[in-house]
Amino acid sequence: MQNSETPQVVYDFIKKYAEAEDCVPTIREICEGTNIKSTSTVHNKINQLILLKKLENRGHKTPAYKLTGYKLVNINK
Image 1 (cartoon, helix red, strand yellow):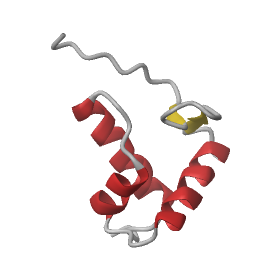
Image 2 (cartoon, helix red, strand yellow):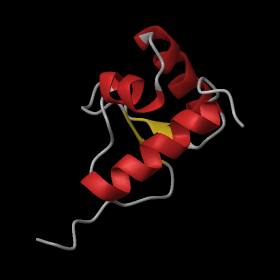
Image 3 (tube, helix red, strand yellow):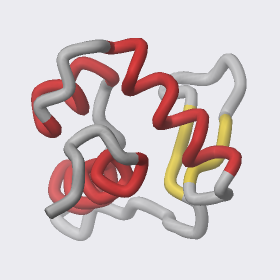
Image 4 (cartoon, one colour):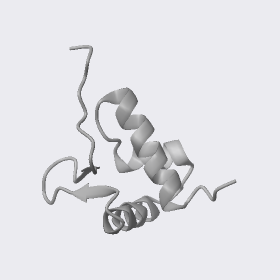
């Protein structure tokens, strides 16, 4: 079983959330969804995922990151 604080667990949560909600989760939603207590830890994992090219940094845009290679499209609209 993976440690709940690994970058892969955070990535898997972000991907699953994005597919269900048509947007990426907030830092606090990631904390809740992965049982990570610290928002700082989540920021660190997101930065690791950016370095691994699994997420893309969007700079000062909101949200500040996106899934690499994914275009979120809401098929219900």
